[in-house]
Image (cartoon, rainbow, N blue to C red; front, side, top):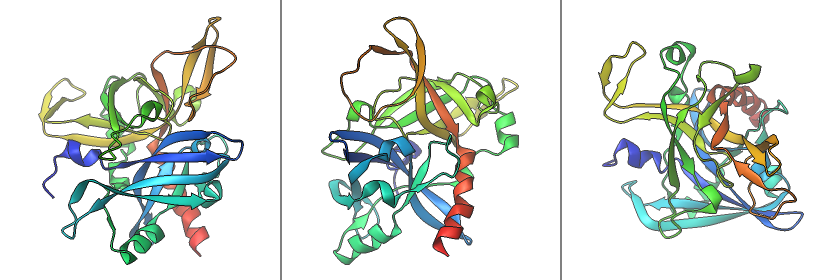
Length: 276
C-alpha cells in the first residue's frame, strides 16, 4: 500500500448519521478498531453511546477499494441500518460513553454484490501501556480525526483533521476517572473521534533528547468538553451530535475530555460472551 502514515490515518474513521426517534438528525464520528477475539482480529466500529442514543435509523458511508485493495477515491457505498441504536454493544459501565458495532457481516454482504470496503483499523498495539505512558511528557502533539459540525469532504468521503496538544498528562487519571484533557477545538459532530498522539519524522523524548522516526498512539476517544454559558457558568456536556437552538448560549473553551483508550480492552470479554 503506497500510503503515508498520515494518509492511512484518514481512513480510520467513518461519518455516522442518525435519524432520531424524537425527530431531527445528528452526526458523529466512528472509527475502525480490530478487537481481539479468540486470537483473531474482529473489525468493529467505536463511537460514543450518546451519538447513537435514540437513533431509529443510521447511515454509514464506507469507502470502497479495487481488487488490489487500494482505495478508490470518490467511491463509497452507504449502508442504512434500521433500529440503529439496538445494533450497538454498550460499554457495561454507565459512566463510560463508549459502544461498538460489529461490521464484518456488512463487509461480507457488500462483497456479495461486488463491493470491497477500504478501511484502516486501529489495533490494540496502538494503545499505549503504562510504561509507554510514563515516557510521555505533559505536553504532547495530538490529532483528532472526525466530522466537526458535520463537515466532511462529501465527494471523497474523507474526514477533517484537527490538531492540538495534551492539556493534562495522559498517564494521569483526570479527577480520578479514566480520562484526560486535550487542548483542541471540539465541535458538534466530533463525538467519537479518535485522539492520536502523532509525531511524523521526529519527536522529543521525556529527557528532551530528539528521537528520529514516526510515533503514533491511540490515546483515547473524545466524548465531552467544558463550555461556558453566557452567564459565565461552566458546564461539562457531551459533545453534541445536533446543531440546534438552545435556551442558553454555549461558548466552547477549546478543551475536550477524552476517555482513555485502555477502556476498549473491556469490550473483549463482553464480545466473547455475546458471540457465544
